[in-house]
Length: 91
Image 1 (cartoon, rainbow, N blue to C red):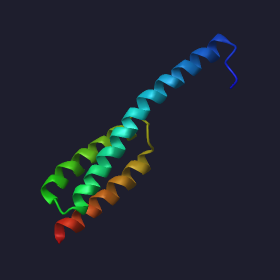
Image 2: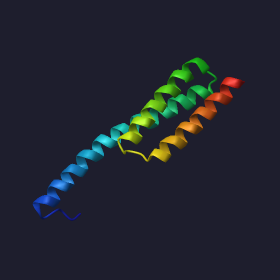
Image 3: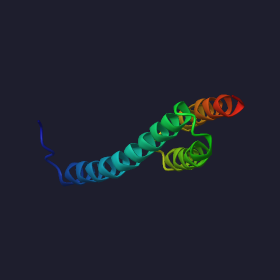
């Protein structure tokens, strides 16, 4: 692993590590919430799934706003999740 030589490169590396750690926690929270919503939908727990889906949508929007994921990725994930929820609700 090549280490940074110049002070500006050292600072940039330190900043990227800091951003990576922050983004990693947000990404993990996002994935866990989406999985939770999908699990509740699969188990036909529609009432609990509704709140989980709304929370997942909020977290996806926040991650897209912060630039952690692309806005199209957030839109696609939200769309797929809501379609799953609506089909489960219609049953």
